[in-house]
Length: 161
Image 1 (cartoon, helix red, strand yellow):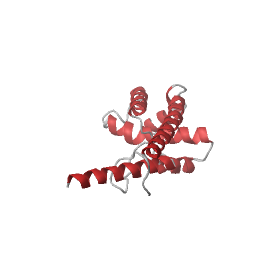
Image 2 (spheres, rainbow, N blue to C red):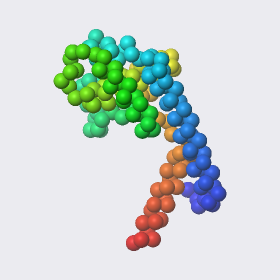
Image 3 (spheres, helix red, strand yellow):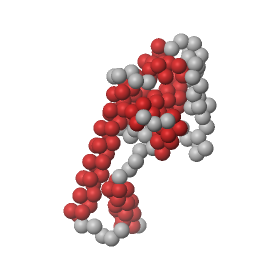
């Protein structure tokens, strides 16, 4: 990566911000389908009542950490979490003594997002799971922005040592 002018760096940062805004808009549409349209309610209630087996219930991530959503915006995640908490509250039975946070984050959140991806994209369940597991698609300008930030941080550390 050659040296960029301040103007070029500003352009990269602006383009990256546009990409993030576009992705947020897409995520808002998915969550609107889940929360306002109740597009995944039947599926989620079936999972909670164990009428549908969820692979996420006992899923062990080989990397050793929780399954994360592809949604980066904390406000959107909070809204989804609160909605899923309400869905869980409507259910009775098997999950009463299990950690609600675990069920919401590790089971219901992936289930809801995969279901909405499958429905909105009109693809198979395995394809939707793959999209979910791949996480967000970052634009070239976002990757370039990241590279610039790393170089800037390394340069700043070099000046202090």
